[in-house]
Length: 322
Image (cartoon, rainbow, N blue to C red; front, side, top):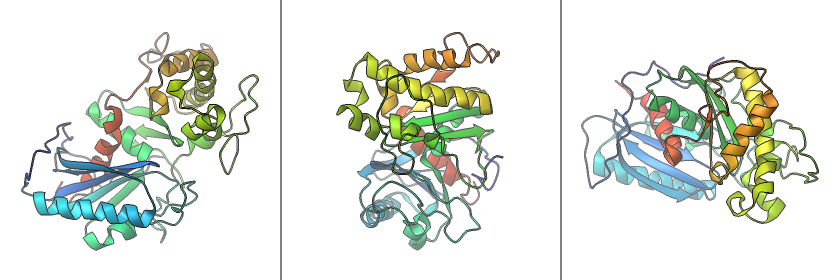
């Protein structure tokens, strides 16, 4: 089932333009947006068309410090540019997305030290405007979906591979979820031949995230993937290919997008395409799955901006009179 990421049907799609030169004031309420990752937060102020007029980034520290810094940025930005009418948050998780729960918007079993129980609604309560929350990976998926105007791709799967591993499935601009958001990074995957690494996930040990996330790579080899060689690339690509093939078989999306810092390692995407194709073994026949999967498994077109663009849209959908 598709999640209730928006409270209304999107109207005019945002345009990917920035204007951050000086004190540009806008008539009408603005959107405050946060893409909160495990290591950094990206902040933005945008107009109702999605044009970014101010932005910043800061490290994701302790929640009380991070929330105070966010509030300082948005209050200063509102003084420069005009009133904020709504906030959109794309956050690392797990996070409660049940709007009927008193814990809505609260981080739950996150591995981020100090963040279990941290509440996004509490952090923004003093602003007194509507707030919408989803995962950081759903925000990135939405940013990529909007790039096509929501027309050329009705369904996509976005996976981020970085501090953690997360996947969002988007159908017609809404995330697929049930009682909570998806947690693709915590599935069990077959071991790569000869791999005896115990894994780093504090809950599951050798789940996908425990074997192939940025911290797992650092724990295995003492370096980031882009500083390692073909054998290490092949190992990580093999694990990610298990996820990719599973996403195809379970959801049949029109495109698989892999983002995040680990995904930028030279040679990873070509290896991932090859190994995914091997695992599918010709079973799925559709023109979307091009030979070699070069058009099917891709990097995000928006690069590192996908998440903040999606967070802006999350806020835009609840903006009064949007």
